[in-house]
Amino acid sequence: MNRLSRFAVAATLSLSMATPLFAQFNRDPLNDKEVNELRETAQEPHARMKLLINFTQRRMDKINVLRADPKMATANAPEIGQLLSDVANLLDEVDDNLSMYDRQGEDMRKSLRAVIEMDTDIRAKLKALKENSTSAQMEQYKFAIEDADESASASVDNAHALLADEMAKKGKEKPDKEESAKDKKKKDDEAKSKGPKQRPDYTGMGGLGKPQR
Image 1 (cartoon, rainbow, N blue to C red):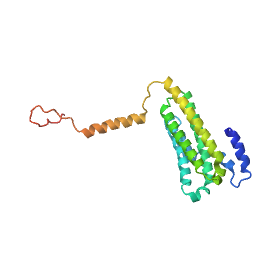
Image 2 (cartoon, rainbow, N blue to C red):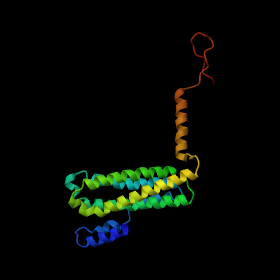
Image 3 (cartoon, rainbow, N blue to C red):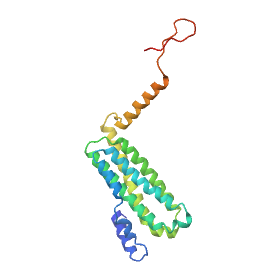
């Protein structure tokens, strides 16, 4: 069953349930602060992808928090369903952005690896959520779990394909500015820790020469 079909089924079921499932699929997954953060990275592909990954992971982390207390897990099921829907929508947004940047010729290999890692982690967490949920809880978010898993599966497949294509077409990866700055600082710190360079001992008396100026 494709995603649109599941939406239709969920909307139909919502008519007979106290908590409308349709609400899970009819809302903006980002808050105003997150929208503004994304807007500021419109011209920075890797920074934008990092934000999207963080936003998605936050939703999964919040799901874990809502399920931490077994006594409240069922009461929190509707909110968990909404968060799962957010995860699915964000994963689709990740996919769309990666494809867009790839078409523009950007080197996205660093971000693609991060997305693959995220997708793999999310699929494992979704599987655990499904296995550890009661039947009453699954009634609240079964379709949301399936939708999120489908999006994660499509996302990881897309990321693998794009990464293989970029590896074949592009040469050695260039370190980004942030990494270059960190490497330079690390080298500078190492040089400082060694202290001033000293002259070799030519006297044969076991003493060290004076530091070179």
